[in-house]
Length: 314
Ligand code: NAP
Image (tube, rainbow, N blue to C red; front, side):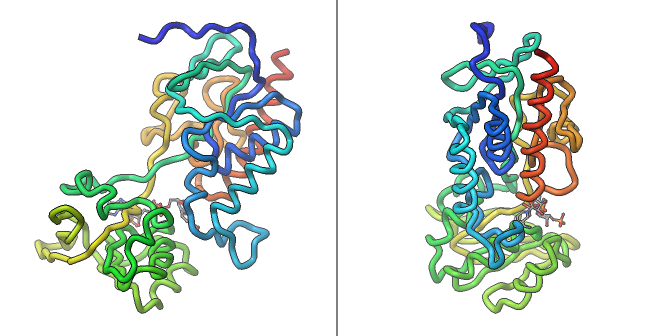
């Protein structure tokens, strides 16, 4: 059982949970507003954007920029205005009057306001073999693992921006990429679709789902099934990259603030949540479009909303 959080007085005005584009932008704006600001990140700052090999639709970078580089500059810029960054996995957020208590795996913090910017994580396929072969041919990150598949035949599952962009990236390494999609039409941005449909290394397997990932020690094949009818085929591949959407990193918020039925934090464009002094920015909140460009807007708004909340409370 966790004990109560002790509050000797808030060291921080604002604590930001999550260091992707939304969190880092909130950190920049809050620090420039001279709020004592701590950002807590579980892994390395940058979030999912940092493992995107190339970001082509963030304004200001004609020709695109690597996600890693872009996120490194976000971090440097925020730190140059005084943002403090700590590593830790936030396990609990508690409300105690005007104070927000944040407990990580090994520390406790309190602040006057909190900004949730924990983003989302990739969905699993949930088929036999997926768990067994994670890291042994099953991957959710082409930037991290693509180079292991030089000259190999592989598969990408999904038809959204992530699947198609990452399939294109994987053409740098793999000999052939089979994109397995459950419909016969892609969801991805048209400009990305056009590139992929015209790429000779990419083959589309339409109207099909993965039923099983098989092999001995490493992935050797996928068992596929047509969505309509009973037709089944075995596709020999050495690896499979899964890009079938994301789910929000909001488990630690259950029962603390209002979430929608999919677990996204209920918050509008002003980033206010159901609990005063707690704001939500970026992919973790309910919104129409989840992009770096929209995450950045949320981060700036959340920092300003937090500043206003703190000055009203004082
Ligand atoms: P997404 O847009 O939700 O697409 C998920 C894809 O996976 C869809 O094609 C979906 O099929 C398919 N899918 C979902 N569940 C499946 C299942 N159980 N089995 C098989 N297929 C399944 O996810 P995303 O591509 O990761 O993108 C997430 C967000 O990030 C989006 O807002 C996207 O625009 C954004 N993003 C943007 C960029 C960019 O450069 N613009 C890059 C990456 C991500 P259906 O089409 O049939 O639903």
